[in-house]
Image 1 (cartoon, rainbow, N blue to C red):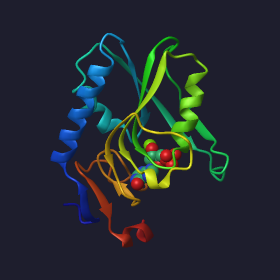
Image 2: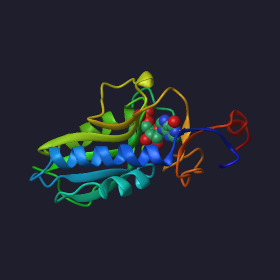
Image 3: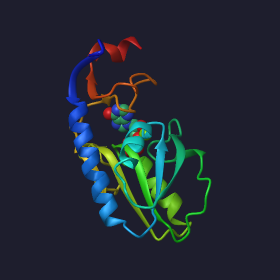
Length: 179
Ligand code: IMP
Ligand code: MG
């Protein structure tokens, strides 16, 4: 285990099983609908890659990159760093996120894409932290509900580190002050 990790919250095996379950569920719900999966970079990249391999229907995929405007968290303003490369009008959009925390990012993104008139927008998240929710947004598909702790691994970072860990873990408290 990585020396900066205090404990493993979700193991590789647990992730594998839950991602497979959600992939099968999405396949059943969107069969014949040719959905477009929209991954929110960078945190989604491992989840998206694993999820897609459990989706056995026709679909396409694209990515967006977003960041929060510094100092404007109260307004919920989100900066779009990379937009979609294709039209989503009339398409079933499935947003793929690493973690639904305050919900500010996803609520903004949902409204941002809604004006392009997709047939539907649903949210698939690896983790859901409902205790921290500020915006009125919920996950249609969620692999894990997690407690209010900062987690890293399987795509999620702390100061751009730990995205490569194959499991989801909680950092040792001293790491937050040393990086
Ligand atoms: P929200 O807008 O507050 O829902 O924030 C969502 C984004 O914040 C996620 O996509 C993550 O990039 C980041 N984030 C929230 N909680 C965590 C965490 O526990 N670990 C790592 N990143 C997190
Ligand atoms: Mg993210």
